[in-house]
Image 1 (cartoon, rainbow, N blue to C red):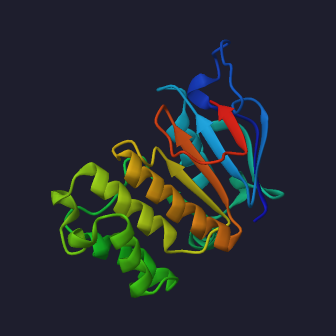
Image 2 (image 1 turned 135 degrees about the horizontal axis):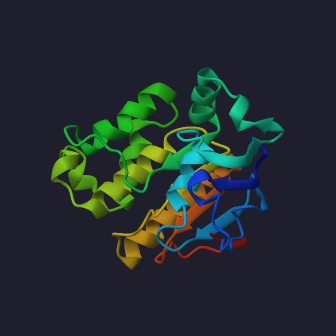
Length: 214
């Protein structure tokens, strides 16, 4: 996949509003592979909705979302499965980790499906992010900031053309935010992937090529 295009897209819940001022909603927006984007938003402007539309978890929007020339509305379940396995990676704002499993088990669930990263590489990421001592800790007993780091590792253990990270560092200090950004960008560059970061304030300090106001 080379491009994700939002064409006159708008959440259905906003369709009767006349005060929409956005670089994304009701616009023609093109995210290109290999480029770095920041989508800044105020609370309640549809940031997580946009992520859900792109990843295919929701379709309550008007307008269109295109993957290259293919309209997302035409995709079958099997198409979405293939996209999420090979083309689209997503780090959820709410993380969606399994609290009863350990940190490593949460990562292994995906990596066992993709076979994309070695155990050695995964453990190196745990070490770099300062959570090597939490590998065997249950997610439900970890802080939210620690969980965010696990969720990022899980997002990276698959091939992708685009990675979409929703509020990835809301509970991280400056040092861990920087390290997370470096790890994410190193992996994205190795795959030639596009990166879309969303934020309602605090965001990873990266050389964004385009900043969009939602």
